Image 1: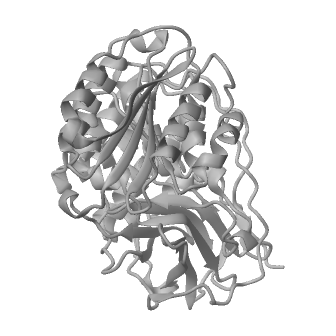
Image 2: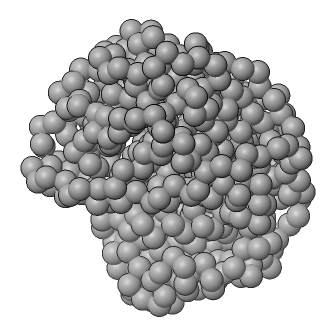
Length: 499
């Protein structure tokens, strides 16, 4: 066996500096394609670190995989952005985010990408990468997946069941008041073919409005205005009642979704995500998906994220009226519709070119190799216009050439459950020479964003500190003239001051 130099997690940020032109042709095919036999399931990475930036982070297990042992990386897609949105609020309030609430993939997926859209309802696959300046044979590989956008006028009718937390903890400004504002905004965007039900919960759950057509919008707005604070936080009771209403009003031709709006601070009934989902599994099996919308300065991140990931849905976090309008007005089709069910990605690395690789983030979304084409295994739900990005830190074989990696995405049609796949490969020769000098701007952005998340979680960012990350973020914001990048630069600088 050839000797290997371990790429430590400390090196991930530097690895995050590569972006390459796509190599190999893209293919799209059904479920009959061949599958390699290699690769065991990657071990779960521990995300433990001290919340205070002045404390040393505890030693954590490396996720690095030697390609002579494991050539294949498999994971469920994830379009959640709640981790980044909550970190924004936390840093804005002058507090370092809790490391166990930082998920790098959600930071990256919160930022705009420039992937081409497919012509149909599947995915385009984009694979590129770049070498990391000053680090011999080390680089970053990016796998980007994109669905086709749709506008609000073209979307199918929706059956939406809102499950609203009205417990005592929601009395704080920026919780129930923000939820009510978001609901009023959304009700103003829905059309005559849509139907809405509203369930409130505190210690118990009650139906505030049964499934109601939007022609009765005034009655629904009155129900929203009547929501009032009382009691404890029994998320289990609320979701159970919500799924019962959604199942009873199920329409096969509509998008059927339960939307949980809560701070996630469950303290009554079953408070575990496993127990809660067990209670609603019978109804959820009827193609009813879940969206969790988190609010509040104190926020039950793990519960809301796990409910979404394991409940056929995704998680977002909102802290302002503007963010609620972004989710429920500008991004309405992506928020409530589906393009793909149980979507998974698999990346096969060529061991003659790649010595080792490490997937950045997705620790709780990893799958065994054989689960990729096992359609009974849960994947991720992806809406129209969503981009999903996965970054890999790689150590290359010196002087090697040929295909570096091939990425495949597999998904099921939301209605028929018919599986399909699309693939693309990357050649070693197509890696950009330098992350910061040669790589596309959006790859550089992904590198800085991922590095920022890693530093806040692990206090390790491939040798980069918050000062250098702040400089890169400011440079990219100026080049792109992108307000989101300008805010990122401000957040990195705020973290630097807190540190």
